[in-house]
Length: 296
Image 1 (tube, rainbow, N blue to C red):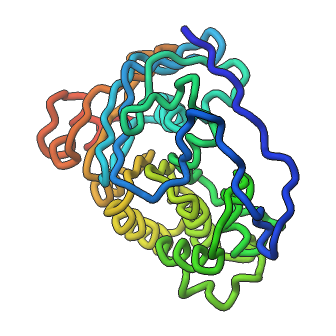
Image 2 (image 1 turned 90 degrees about the vertical axis):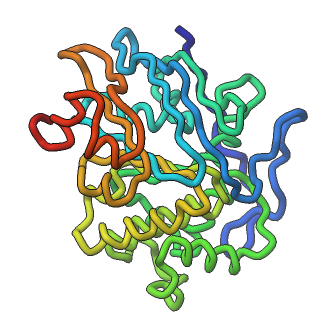
């Protein structure tokens, strides 16, 4: 068992422009690939991932290929390790002081936990959208979009263009194009979640992780987010945690069912494969029972 190390902190204060953006990128150490690269078709692979919080083992040897430019849904009852697994995929697990893990997570064949890979670089490659919208309340809509780049010290040649592009890709530009200098917190809940998606997209990630992104939204806002997910998967690899079986069927290409075998036992994958197969022709009877609501 290997205890993961705390990632580096935020950069020091930078000179900034009207968006709060630094004038130059923070230099990457020698030998480390600069992860602010154009979006590509990149898959992510987890191999034999186990995880602990202190002495409590929460995941047991999870292996999963998340295909490029596809949506993979992680389903299963609460407490089976789905969100923990999602956080492992962009090194948020290590923020918990007692956290530990074993196994590997590879993006384009490179282990993101390798000794030469900085945690900040990993998170530029692998973005995250959380369960509840979390725009920065003191920032405008435009500043929220650029916040990830600002905090990483990344130079942007055309911030206006990037704000427009990111909001368009998140399906929010038409609703906010005349409100860019208003506070992000003034938006509705569904709009705030799309703003958070735009913020994640602005750093040009290769993979986007989404932890129950619609659980706090109304059906209309949920429908808009789902359309956005399907549009984005043409250029990104997306991994989504959801407890909504209909949503998993609507938005995902592949599914992985997580279960635990009893109280205090770690979560593991029971079955993974194309979504249509898991819902209509599952190999494991537990999969059929779960997706058809017989337990969970």
